[in-house]
Image 1: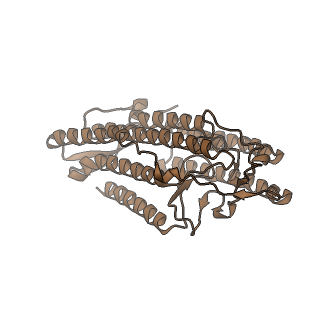
Image 2: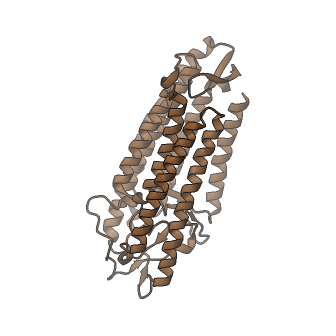
Image 3: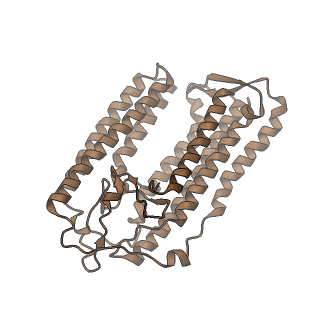
Length: 367
């Protein structure tokens, strides 16, 4: 197996593995994008659909991995197409499970006779969680180091620079020497650091998803979850910047990698991503698995149950609520946060990120 086929196979296999374990990140009262009353989290339809989802996505991961390995001899975009098709197929498995759980929820009247409540924590505004600004220092330091090295090496660089390397380490794109072609990796580092930091700042202003049966406990767990996740994402930004630094050094002819060693620039990103996913899996969405978490099954009878807000979640993954001023809310499936697509500011933010990313990619491709 060549380094290129190994890289393609591992990438597609990783995507499939993440899709397969995604339900494990989500709290028991949120099943495949469906809000479930605490007393219904052990329903047979939920157990059946979780097992079916794991089997389906597991088989898909193996099939798409084999396809990716076999297609590595063709154009590079074929592997990207395989990964995209894998995600689409995984989304189809998610939708099938969501529709069947929703049908059971409606037919059996899971929310009939319950008192739906909305719980807030007034201390979230008066005593907000402090943003771990110092944890952004490693990402900034790596960016500054890359800039300094680039400035030192720039006068001695040749007239043509390698701006893109294939998985085997061979150069597949060259560009004339310019400030942009030489320092595009630095611009990428600034972009990555800025996007992750801005999105985290928004999450620190977003409201937590509080369990009405244990308001104080769930808020405390969410604070811990938010702090750990923010630190992990900022460290991941630093590792992404390290990968870009290694790519820049290769472009600046500080070293040359071939064969399996050509994957070195991607190694810090891969290690950081896997480590972060393991930590998030141990905590669960909103930190519901953290020590001291009250079991959700059977809880909530005295204080009511969380509001059935499925109508605001399109396809179980897109939050659209024009009456909600929040820009960022907790995800319904998986882990992390998503935008409120009913808020114009969310669309403005998304368009700005996409426009800048597309501009950087086009400028790099045309350099």
